[in-house]
Length: 318
Image (cartoon, rainbow, N blue to C red; front, side):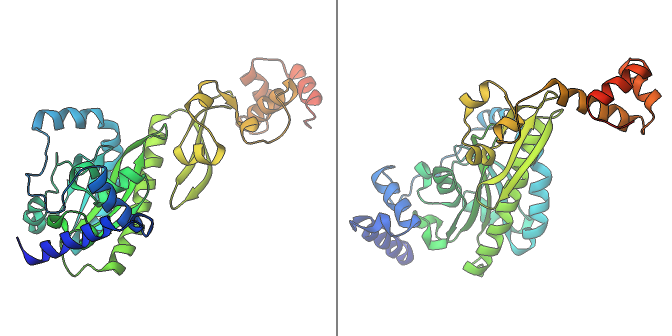
């Protein structure tokens, strides 16, 4: 056994044996989980787990929409970090690698490290690592070299952020990994910020793709929780909410089963009224007609006199 791996193993097990270690840092807590919950050994020498081709093909088909939406984001991310020897990886929610972008010159290094399509990088399989720990904790993480649990992974630096589906469920992890020893903590922090931004972009595009044809309402953007978005139908009823919106508004699947009015959900304004509805329809028709009352009346299928009566009732000036 290489000396560096043996020393790493001793360090990990010393931390796990400490009664207060799990509370000292997120990495220490993950090391403890790796031993006490997942039953792993930092000196593990078993072959890396990898799904077969048929299973991977079925898995990619299952996640086809997410992969399609994510592809341009992964390409852009790789253009930003690929020249520095990084790989860009997207996994599913179990940590199985679905996509990988890497330079030809770095293929052998990442393949030897087990970062290939179909590889299982859940925390239960590899212990503390960027993909698996990100998914377990459902939050962005940096696992730099010897912060990994397994000694065989101490030459890798990983920067990860979770990706959620349009219903707020964990769908996968976006990972940027490096096998180069000149990538220090400062570079890891810079890349991690790019990873978080890219993961939010995938979530936004995934949400908008799923609710195509609906009005999308932007509420806020947060570096950790993501972009808060609502999907609203033609009757101004909320039919979908991103994970960030669910967290912000306290929503879950049960709360969204029965559509609720956007204004009610946001705590804005009074209840619905026919007057407000008429006013909105009249203003939209006039706007579409460029202010021409006769054309607006034709669009609405009513006479000009009726249009003027309804405008007066709604408080609109001809």
